[in-house]
Image (tube, rainbow, N blue to C red; front, side, top):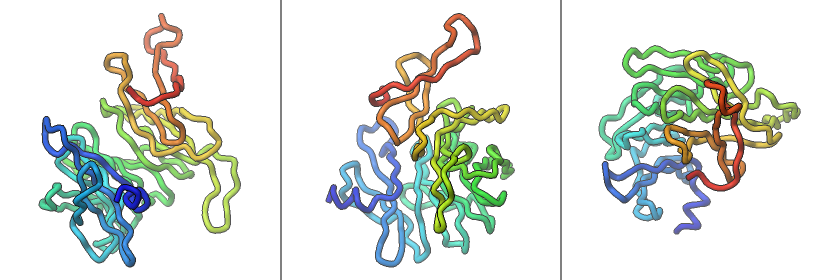
Length: 249
């Protein structure tokens, strides 16, 4: 079962089963013969059950920071939009409603803002949706493709992958660009490039480092972590990112 789970998982998210509990649940996308649906299983991959099965395509699940919601992309409304529902399937809510392609949802640490990828600007940019006012804004606004937003723990930055600096040629049936990891400051829009792998670096996530109140983005291409430190050490507000091999601790 474990081997089969690895072959069918397209996007997966892990959530605590309950506040303070030691057990976890996994939400993942399963490609069936005619459809893709989201399933929920225990942390061993056993007991998988469908989550809101529908004849249309459902994919790319993520979990809210408080573990109460599963966010996912669905085409059940006629276009690819972002939805959310509780783990038991109740409270289904459509969060975006546009003819564009909306995907790759990530909820902010305080649960008030949705980051997602959308083609509504004519290409793939990262957008924010204020869940209280329903106002949206484009936070990357670049002619290249920006993907896989990941919130910093303080909610002030987003890490994401992009092919904006790729020098690789486009292919006939797809894009041969390389992707790198970037961070955008939501307060001022400043974008910083973090990786220079000239390959496929993407799907960033954040981990806490040994330093108090420090969090760094990591990406799935190489095992290791980025560490932020003052540089020079005596200059306030000056930081340097360094890559360290090994897992996040």
